[in-house]
Length: 213
Image 1 (spheres, helix red, strand yellow):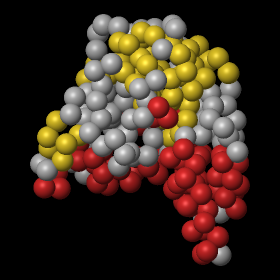
Image 2 (cartoon, rainbow, N blue to C red):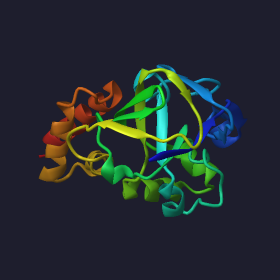
Image 3 (cartoon, one colour):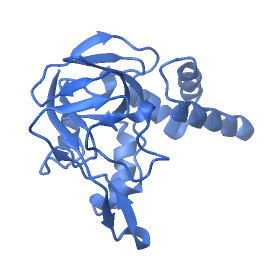
């Protein structure tokens, strides 16, 4: 695995929905970037309810997703990620996986939950639906050890997480209509590395499912 691109974004104003501030657009940085428990230096979030925080300090997207989602004409960072990572995809990553990049240690906390802004930058809300249905959505990490990262740095897999892989976990929450999905979500709740946001969202999802049945 290797860091292909390190990307940061500034808050900008967009005309979406009558006026929206967002830092979804990230641009590659050539020099080393400091990573702390709060995320990457000089990277910003406008919507602090749904983005950022210690559980979602760093967003990683596999580089293969750019071809998969039909956006390979764009520079890395276009999908909003902080780290564009080669050599792995969501079928090979689980919540609790730990990765080391030089001194930085990251722990996977949850799949990304794509929002409507991703549709806006792609000029189509159907993009978000297709992106979601693939389960290849990227994943968030918390920072267990701070340090500097830079493009071309190798990534070491320190330890394995548990439960379903990121793709399967995301799709289980998206649909949650089968016994298999129910079991995946129940298992995820027992994972101490799972983010608080996803733990709460899964509990709500399972509650709705039990009421429907």
